[in-house]
Length: 142
Image 1: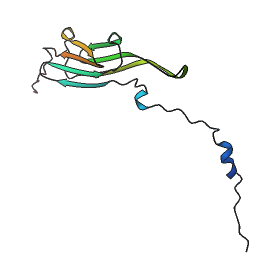
Image 2 (image 1 turned 180 degrees about the horizontal axis):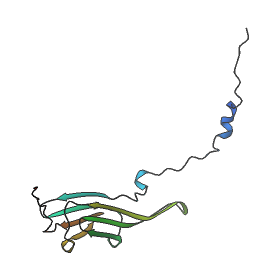
Image 3 (image 1 turned 90 degrees about the horizontal axis):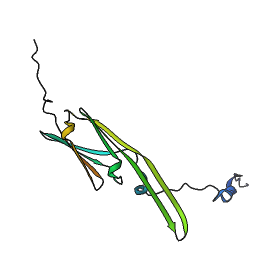
Protein backbone atom coordinates (compact mmCIF):
# COMPACT_ATOMS: atom_id res chain seq x y z
CA UNK A 1 0.00 0.00 0.00
CA UNK A 2 1.21 3.51 -0.79
CA UNK A 3 1.87 6.11 1.88
CA UNK A 4 -0.44 9.08 1.52
CA UNK A 5 1.01 12.50 2.40
CA UNK A 6 -0.86 15.73 2.63
CA UNK A 7 0.74 18.53 0.59
CA UNK A 8 0.84 22.01 2.17
CA UNK A 9 1.65 24.67 -0.46
CA UNK A 10 2.40 27.29 2.22
CA UNK A 11 4.82 25.21 4.30
CA UNK A 12 7.87 26.67 2.53
CA UNK A 13 6.59 30.26 2.87
CA UNK A 14 7.82 30.60 6.47
CA UNK A 15 11.33 31.41 5.27
CA UNK A 16 9.93 33.93 2.79
CA UNK A 17 8.09 35.93 5.47
CA UNK A 18 10.82 35.67 8.12
CA UNK A 19 11.97 39.21 8.89
CA UNK A 20 9.38 40.69 6.56
CA UNK A 21 7.16 41.98 9.36
CA UNK A 22 8.78 44.14 12.01
CA UNK A 23 7.80 43.83 15.61
CA UNK A 24 6.64 47.01 17.37
CA UNK A 25 9.17 48.66 19.62
CA UNK A 26 8.41 48.23 23.30
CA UNK A 27 9.70 50.45 26.07
CA UNK A 28 10.04 49.72 29.75
CA UNK A 29 7.03 50.58 31.87
CA UNK A 30 9.04 53.15 33.84
CA UNK A 31 9.66 55.16 30.67
CA UNK A 32 6.03 55.21 29.54
CA UNK A 33 4.23 58.49 30.12
CA UNK A 34 1.72 58.54 32.93
CA UNK A 35 -0.38 61.42 31.72
CA UNK A 36 -3.90 61.92 32.93
CA UNK A 37 -4.03 60.51 36.45
CA UNK A 38 -3.09 62.08 39.77
CA UNK A 39 -2.99 59.76 42.79
CA UNK A 40 -4.50 61.43 45.84
CA UNK A 41 -4.56 60.62 49.59
CA UNK A 42 -7.06 62.60 51.70
CA UNK A 43 -6.88 62.65 55.51
CA UNK A 44 -9.41 64.36 57.76
CA UNK A 45 -9.34 65.56 61.35
CA UNK A 46 -11.70 67.84 63.29
CA UNK A 47 -10.27 71.07 61.89
CA UNK A 48 -8.94 70.38 58.39
CA UNK A 49 -8.37 68.06 55.44
CA UNK A 50 -4.83 67.16 54.41
CA UNK A 51 -4.39 66.14 50.77
CA UNK A 52 -1.28 64.51 49.31
CA UNK A 53 -1.26 64.40 45.49
CA UNK A 54 1.50 62.64 43.55
CA UNK A 55 2.57 64.77 40.58
CA UNK A 56 6.20 63.78 39.87
CA UNK A 57 8.42 65.62 37.40
CA UNK A 58 6.34 68.80 37.33
CA UNK A 59 7.50 72.35 37.99
CA UNK A 60 5.63 73.89 40.93
CA UNK A 61 4.75 76.92 38.77
CA UNK A 62 2.81 74.60 36.42
CA UNK A 63 0.42 73.39 39.17
CA UNK A 64 -3.01 74.98 39.64
CA UNK A 65 -5.32 74.33 42.60
CA UNK A 66 -8.85 75.70 42.74
CA UNK A 67 -11.34 75.44 45.60
CA UNK A 68 -15.06 76.15 45.26
CA UNK A 69 -16.97 75.36 48.45
CA UNK A 70 -16.29 71.67 49.01
CA UNK A 71 -15.02 70.98 45.46
CA UNK A 72 -11.25 70.77 44.95
CA UNK A 73 -9.55 70.67 41.54
CA UNK A 74 -5.85 70.02 40.93
CA UNK A 75 -4.27 70.31 37.49
CA UNK A 76 -0.70 70.46 36.22
CA UNK A 77 1.07 70.78 32.90
CA UNK A 78 3.47 67.89 32.28
CA UNK A 79 6.53 68.35 30.08
CA UNK A 80 8.88 65.40 29.67
CA UNK A 81 11.60 64.74 27.15
CA UNK A 82 14.02 61.86 26.82
CA UNK A 83 16.86 61.26 24.37
CA UNK A 84 18.90 58.12 24.05
CA UNK A 85 22.17 58.26 22.11
CA UNK A 86 24.74 55.67 21.20
CA UNK A 87 27.90 57.54 20.35
CA UNK A 88 27.05 60.23 17.79
CA UNK A 89 23.92 58.45 16.58
CA UNK A 90 20.51 59.40 18.00
CA UNK A 91 18.68 56.13 18.66
CA UNK A 92 15.46 57.43 20.26
CA UNK A 93 13.93 60.78 21.17
CA UNK A 94 10.63 61.12 23.00
CA UNK A 95 8.64 64.14 24.15
CA UNK A 96 5.44 64.18 26.16
CA UNK A 97 3.36 67.28 26.75
CA UNK A 98 -0.03 67.25 28.35
CA UNK A 99 -2.16 68.01 31.34
CA UNK A 100 -2.98 65.87 34.36
CA UNK A 101 -6.00 66.72 36.48
CA UNK A 102 -8.01 65.48 39.42
CA UNK A 103 -11.23 66.83 40.96
CA UNK A 104 -13.09 65.63 44.04
CA UNK A 105 -15.58 66.83 46.63
CA UNK A 106 -15.18 66.86 50.38
CA UNK A 107 -17.85 66.40 53.05
CA UNK A 108 -17.45 69.96 54.41
CA UNK A 109 -16.83 73.35 52.81
CA UNK A 110 -13.24 74.57 52.80
CA UNK A 111 -12.06 77.93 54.13
CA UNK A 112 -10.21 79.12 51.00
CA UNK A 113 -8.56 82.04 52.81
CA UNK A 114 -6.76 79.74 55.27
CA UNK A 115 -5.82 76.99 52.78
CA UNK A 116 -2.14 76.36 52.07
CA UNK A 117 -0.17 74.36 49.49
CA UNK A 118 3.41 73.11 49.26
CA UNK A 119 5.23 70.98 46.67
CA UNK A 120 8.26 68.85 47.49
CA UNK A 121 9.77 65.70 45.93
CA UNK A 122 6.88 65.25 43.48
CA UNK A 123 4.17 65.42 46.14
CA UNK A 124 1.73 68.32 46.45
CA UNK A 125 0.47 68.82 50.01
CA UNK A 126 -2.71 70.80 50.59
CA UNK A 127 -3.94 71.77 54.04
CA UNK A 128 -7.61 72.69 53.69
CA UNK A 129 -9.22 74.00 56.91
CA UNK A 130 -12.93 73.39 57.33
CA UNK A 131 -15.28 76.37 57.48
CA UNK A 132 -16.61 77.01 60.98
CA UNK A 133 -20.23 77.31 59.85
CA UNK A 134 -20.18 73.98 58.04
CA UNK A 135 -21.63 72.02 60.95
CA UNK A 136 -24.43 69.58 60.26
CA UNK A 137 -27.70 70.53 61.87
CA UNK A 138 -30.66 68.41 62.78
CA UNK A 139 -34.24 69.28 61.88
CA UNK A 140 -37.10 68.17 64.08
CA UNK A 141 -39.77 66.25 62.17
CA UNK A 142 -43.32 67.29 63.04
